[in-house]
Length: 418
Image 1 (tube, rainbow, N blue to C red):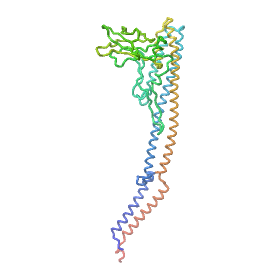
Image 2 (image 1 turned 45 degrees about the vertical axis):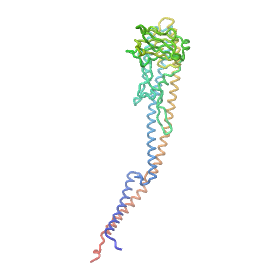
Image 3 (image 1 turned 120 degrees about the horizontal axis):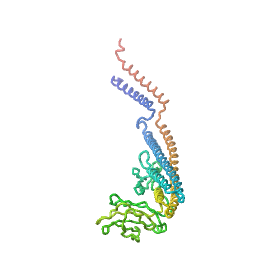
Image 4 (image 1 turned 135 degrees about the vertical axis):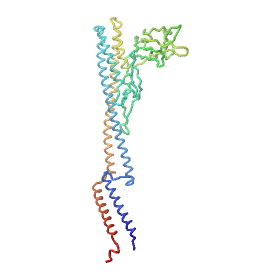
């Protein structure tokens, strides 16, 4: 059979190209260390490799999440430890303040100064921020400063009651923050008490302020609890007056209907005492005047406990009445501080439990990643011994194809004519 010269060249070219392609692929495999260079090499294995690589990436992200969570919780634990140390010092100061028969006004001035310094320290701790600048006691409102204080010593909470979470694995989510309301505000009080607030829509400029206040007659206040009061301002015959109503019943409190207002003068109602300073807006036409609320509660914030102690020490004098009141405040303070310790210790225990969960989950993630990488390696890793043997064979095949083509290409009838 006669074979055309062009056909000889085509066959040789195809053979050498195939040999060169196989050789190049083996070289690429050996350079990358991977058996599968494209999905076409092994579609089933390529799909499995893609899934396993995604799983490794997920596990890496979980481990990063755990690092972030541990940093946040360690910071919270440090802050709580500092608060407990502060509370222990305040317990010592409260005990000292109870020595009304011995201490002088100058002694109480020193106690007030340190107490106020501790209140400042508490405010800073309650507004602790993490490395990302997020407030750790603000609930979900991490970018909002949770605790503020006005000139009257009132503390306000601007966060919420949420707990931020982070995924530590596919099945484990861990709380990485605690609401400041739960930790520092909702502390059981030894007695029923109250907190005061100005209506945010008040119009007075500068803003009129209401004091923290105190319970002066526990039995009378217990009769009010759990009802709340509203102090509203109006104008009668050109004079600013206030009326106090029971917000639950809507009834005016006896003796508190359109009373003449005097800035800074104590207002006594239902066993509670507080002051309003400034010039409240009395209203005009359909525009209501300023209003302030008194909310009864069986809880008292740590900051309020310290503020009321400071104010009682600051007001004490040589009269038996003021000393008796201070003794009462000291007793309440010690009880409320003990409740604060209990409350914060519970949260501290939860933080420790979360850190333990993160540590055990980290170990599980590391084990899972190791197992996944072993399976991944079995699927895609190149057997270098087999590849080396194959490479030598492919080099031999290519060399043979090239040499045989040279010999065939040199054949000619004229070579046999002498």
